[in-house]
Image (cartoon, rainbow, N blue to C red; front, side, top):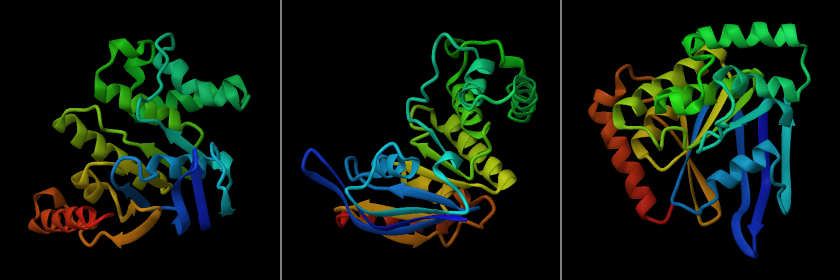
Length: 238
């Protein structure tokens, strides 16, 4: 099960964003898209979800489909008039799933993500970390093969950000889906990404994360050495 991009290119207002990209995303893995603003990271998520179409090249879905791809946006897109329960319910209502089945799924997921006690609350009654978990719940409720996260922790303080990153990985391990995260944060990339894709100049360079399997890797010297390596690569144009 995978998504393949073959010679994919995308342009916006005559500006070339992505050029002849060849990359595959396999099920059960974590990927991070890293790069400067404007290099096409969020555009790549939109292409994977089908919100945008490539101007050339091909995106193919092996044993999966665009329907099995969900995206959590940077601004979380939680509507102020929807309770936590209603926000998580929305993707199922769009799919016109049976009400009884929806209720069971939602209650189980809210309990799993420790959101049950917040089910009747509105977004402005939640902390930043709680809102992030609600957005994740809305992305997970359809049990996608591929979950796309567009800078999911950018608005959080450092302590909450680290807890959110741990939560993202624990949920991925539990479900064995694929998580593709866009970030500007190099340390976040090294923590979350089994494979790190550095984008720049319309192309992409792929790096296996040598310390992804380390326990407590934030505390290791190797973690920061790899961060420095990626920072130097980014300074070099990617």
